[in-house]
Image (cartoon, rainbow, N blue to C red; front, side):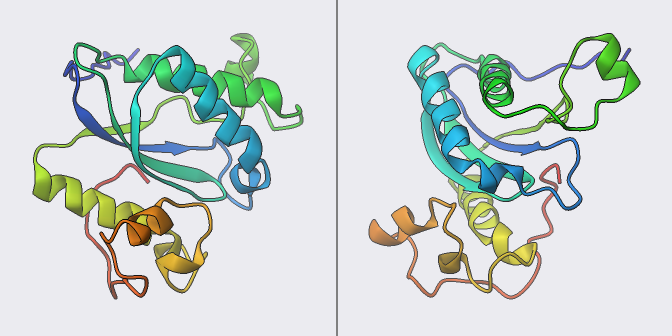
Length: 176
């Protein structure tokens, strides 16, 4: 088994990529957006954190979170979120033999991508990448056209102009 370690950084800001196990043709996250939102609320009540930014695509999502001072337990939060969402949606997904032996559902990839945000420039690059992601994957022609994103809040707050967009890849390793 892989010796998998995470950085312990209490109160830090993190960028995450979380994927469904079956990505091809899967639209579960946007079809069940209300369940996903309820799952985020459920976790935030039990393990508070600040949701700096989020984009939900049909089969994966990206978030930027800031944890409270003294708290580094983002893995616990993702376990709670995945579990809450999985219990709220019906069964029917393909379950591999290894998952069946462990009595696991087959909705989510077991792991997720976590990147510790290092400074403001790193934060800005990940924020841009997150908001550009629906365009990158062909779900929208511009970030403002995608409804499942904090982009609209950032426009309202004056961070981005409504017509913001890039024409190219960001060239970042973000766990997709």
